Amino acid sequence: MKRCTRALLSVSDKRGLVELARALAEMSIEILSTGGTARRLRENGIPLREVSQVTGLPEMLDGRVKTLHPAIHAGILARRDDPRHLEELERQGFAPIDLVVVNLYPFAETAARPEATPAELIEEIDIGGPTLIRAAAKNFMGVAVVVSPDDYPRVIEELKAGGALSLQTRLELARKAFALTAGYDSTIAPRLEELQAEADGLKRAGASGFPAVLSLRGPKVMDLRYGENPHQRAALYRLAGVYPAEASGVGGARQLQGKELSYNNLLDLDAAWDLASEFDASTFARRGERQSNQEPVAVIIKHTNPCGVAVSATQAEAYEKALACDPVSAFGSVLGFNQAVTAGTAEAMSKLFVEAVAAPGYQPGALELLAKKKNLRLLEVTRSAPLGSVIPSEACPERSRRVEGSAFRGEWRVRSISGGLLIQDKDCAQLNYEQLRTVTKRVPTAAEMQSLLFAWVVAKHVKSNAVVYARDGQTVGIGAGQMSRVDAVKLGAQKARELGHAERLKGSVLASDAFFPFPDGVEEAAKAGVTAIIQPGGSVRDPEVMAAADRLGLAMVLTGVRHFRH
Image (cartoon, rainbow, N blue to C red; front, top):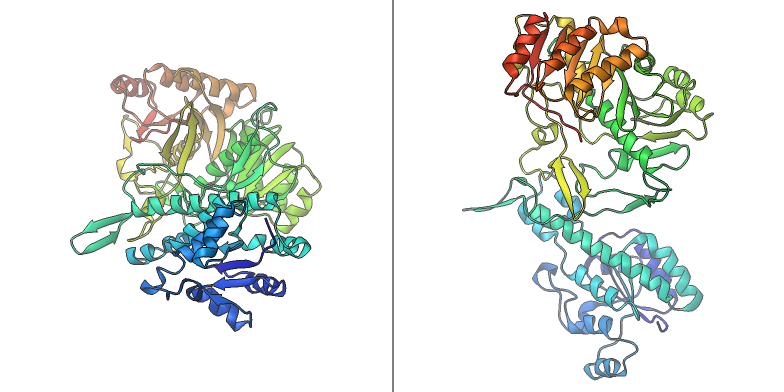
């Protein structure tokens, strides 16, 4: 790149603009500009030429056409190492443009506003900006393109040092430029699927299904030490446009202390946060009614499965009850809380080796205590939306929250398979009390129903085949990831007995994430001391399963909702 003599500045995001332009002017670099950018520079006494002076044409069509002219694009695209290109520029009376500083109309911000109209969305689709960026990025061998104010200080420093930007810098800037335009288009495409053509024009009604072409984008947050195993590479990306807020969830969490996060840490943290978030304000039910207060919940995760979950009057009590379920497996675990971690909880946690914690916040006293464990990773997580499995609604909260014209369509779960990606909605199906059916002669007591609902929420987050034994807001035994349901029932009871919970099994309840294919699972549960069962139903052998429950004196409730988790 020869010495930079001419720059084009046209930006929507005006952070750092004046400082950059003033530095360019001090280096005698001619500035071309347009519209609002030119006005801002003039207001600050910075000399410039309007693009219209170069093209010989005024801005047209309410600013839709400003820079789309050979005098601009030839100056950007001419190869500096090709004499014929330079001669042709001279014949046409055009001059090279060495630096292009452009960012784009804020389409994503406009689309995020529920009240934004189709017309507003369409006007925020930038045409000239991406064209300028792509042209300059293509010709990075001789032209520098800057799309982020974050890069202005580096550009100023390098230009002041040598009058030009190095090839390495120009290459890095070109990569950022193409990433920006690719992301910009991938933001626009799914939003157009929200528009419906009607007799009187366009209506913004929300997307009705998955897009015909999937575009996922997002910045890399960090490289990870390794993947599931040391021989595997890994990185964390934050997916933009899939979640309701880019800073929400574990992917957007703020790490307050501790070692760098590993791939496995993040998987476990996500599992812990997901389950803890089920017990959000006004979502957990007692006796089939909504609670007005939020009960503290503590979740202990090992290898993405809960090994202890409990609710209680205080967070510290909830933690102690969750730990009591399986203190052996809890060593080296990951914890999740639905409320800010208190000093009392932090003191109780200090007795256990914990890898990481996910919570919506930490009280000062808790941070002071946990700071003594320098390697303990603490994540402060922002909620994306209330979840909850036990509120009287059939729809996902994300979907039911959508107001007319909103672009928000809830979270997706994305998993890779060989040669492709699998996409599904987040499992936020909720129980509708009116559809719960007691199918046995004995009806659950109020206490049993409360325990059944608690166990059902936990079972949703246990890998299939899954069963959860629970009692008084506390898990007693968990059977996870078994190939047969009766084995899951046996394993949950076996673990409870091994850990000294045989007496607590008596009078406990059981939740199953899917139906019982045979009566044997119900029979094993009764042997363990279970008095009530909640399960989806739907097996061809449901009558046999219900008959077994009646024969054994159990209460059984059917939900009609399955929660497989693979």
